[in-house]
Amino acid sequence: MNGMKICSSIHYTAPYQYNRTYPNFRSVGFLDMPKEDIFQRIKDSLNYQYFIGQGTEAEVYKIKDTDYCVRIPYETKDLYSFNYTKDLTPADKLNHAEAKLGFGATIMKYIEGILPKTFINNDKHRYNLQSQAADMPIKSYSSLLHQIGVAIDNDMLFDFTGGNIIINPQKQELTAIDFIKMSPDYPRSTSPMNEMFNALTSYGTKQEIGLKIMKKILLTGLEEFKPNVKPCMDLELFDFVEFFENGNMRADEKIDTAPFNKYIEELKHIKKLELKDSKYAAQLESIIKKVEAEILKLR
Image 1 (tube, one colour):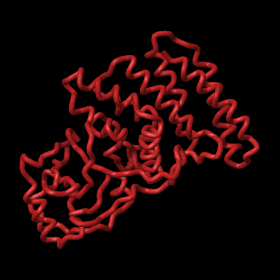
Image 2: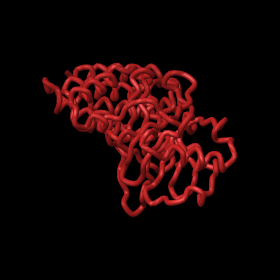
Image 3: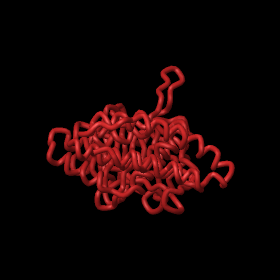
Image 4: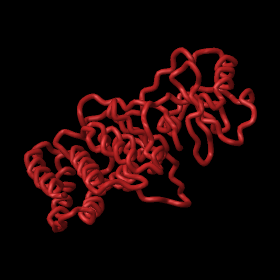
C-alpha cells in the first residue's frame, strides 16, 4: 500500500535463533477505551491531515494522538455498524492487526519507515533508501526472513512488492506488511530469498546496491544452517541455487555456479543430519565456509 506505515515487532531470544512465535502485540491505552470513544477517535482521523496511503482495496489513516493507524476498505460506509474485537487469528497478527472492526477494517500499530514505492518515480531517493537497506546488519534481514517463515507456517504468502515492505534506516528494521492466504485453487510456490530481494529492489536499483543486498540475503539464509540453529522454515524452501544464479547473471564477472550448487546440496543434507545428531556440527561448519566463500565471489 503506497505510503502505508504500520508497526509490529518480531520476538527473538538471541541473534539468528528466533522463537517461532507471532508478533508480540500490546493493547493498552487507546485499545482499552470504550468502543464508542475508539470509533469517534477513528472518525475524527479520517481526513487528509492523517492520511497515510492507499492500496487496491483500502485507505490507511494515522489515528490522531495514538501510535496506531486504521485500514478502511473503500466500500466501508458506517463505522458504527462494526463489531469491535481484539480476538485475532494468526493471519490477522501476521498482517499487524491489533483489533478488528469488521468488513476488513483493522486497527494496526503505526510503523515508522519508508516504502520503496514512495520513490517509484525518484531514482535518486529510491537508490539512497535501498543503499541504506543494503548496509543493515544480518539480524535485520533475519527478522524479515523469519516473518516470511511464520507466514509459510500459517499457509500465507508474502505479497512481495515495493509497496509492502517498510524500511526504517534509523532503527535498522525491515518489515513486511502484506501477507495473503494461499489459495488451494491457485497455488503459488514460495521463493523467500527472491521475494525479499524483489521487495527491496522494486522499481529498479543500481547494480552495486542490488548485489550487496543479494549477498546479504544469501548470508542471512546461511545463518539458518549454522549448528544449533533451528531453521525458520523447511530446508527445501531455501532457494539458494536459483537466487545465486540470478545474482551471477547480474555480477560484473561471471563465476561457475556448479561448485555453489553442489555445496548447497551437501549443506542441506548435512544440516538435516545435524538437526538429529550434533556430531555433524564440525562438518556443517566446514561446508558453510565453502558456501560463504562462493557468495563473497559475487562482484
